[in-house]
Image (cartoon, rainbow over all chains, first blue to last red; front, side):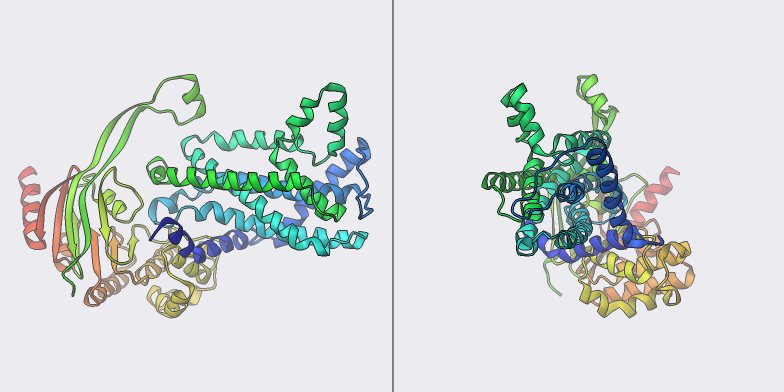
Length: 272
Length: 247
């Protein structure tokens, strides 16, 4: 059996591992799965107060949707970002936190980071569904764009999983990785136009030099956030430039992550 | 019964690095700017043998002789640095029971979870569900979270899932010694049943009684090398003679 065949054959294991995460996470909590919604809502509230009410971040009016609501605009970028950080943060520790299992049973190891993506994706899907509903209530016509939104959700999942797979192997060698990444991800978030619009960076580039803007656009997450805003907030076709970058980054990240994981997994048990 | 061996172990060697100075943090790797210091320890060193299909094969040896490492290589948990292992059919290993259990999930949910970790499909688990539960003897508590189980119940449930995987080759570490006397007797019967079905079993044990009773063939391993291999009775007498002469 080839590696890929074996991986495919273990899809039932993957769905069971996803179930384990989803079901086990909120067991014995009063609100259960609702907690996964309270979390982004609270973040939305905080960022809206700080950046919209206090700092008065001005956003562009959605075209053609005509939406001009900061919290909705924010969430179109923040939900994909939160998904990305959760996958990377939990995915990189997926091997070390399941060490007892990895040391005692053989199964295709890639299912561990995949299961993190699956269970996080499940929550994200609910969040995005709720956001789409809110956008509809606010007058945005998001419905025809839903299939395309799903496609880009899959692309972002591939991108995040690739990074998580590579870091999962790295974490086994250097346990510092998780501490380092929590700081790096925080910095990364503020380097991505999530709480402020890209136009602010454009303005800064005019006075301080074009290189700032060019550098900014190298950030893969910037393109993903743009695409989700085009589709959900503006309700229009995304910029082809953004689309191509998203596809490119997703494929590159997943392929590299896959290769790194495959090369590293044989030595895992000796190091755990 | 086929003449082809179920498992072929060919010149398997595996080394561990014994670090005197190890770079396991970034600080160590970057600040010291030198390579980690280690010496190689060969836990397995050129082991070759064949396990005939349908036979029960025992591994004996002192603590730290490499038996469990060999089982892990057979189970594909560790990869050998040299040599190869070829197995015909599906391989399942019983190195630790209940290791995939999630404490907050119920016994029922954990049977499905653990079954799939061990390579069973959902259909197979459903088909064998009653058998598994009956064997474990925890039917009354099957819808309770397993964290409320006693340690005996926990291990029995884990063992019952594992023993019902129905592989062609079963690899067993000393886990035969779980549960009370009644459960042990049940396990012994189950192994006999598997044997009668023509399954190949590879097991590690320190109990010469178990070995004599269950195994057709055995191998004695010492310091990562094969000392004797042959029919169980011969290997046992060789091994016991060596132990006695040392004592």
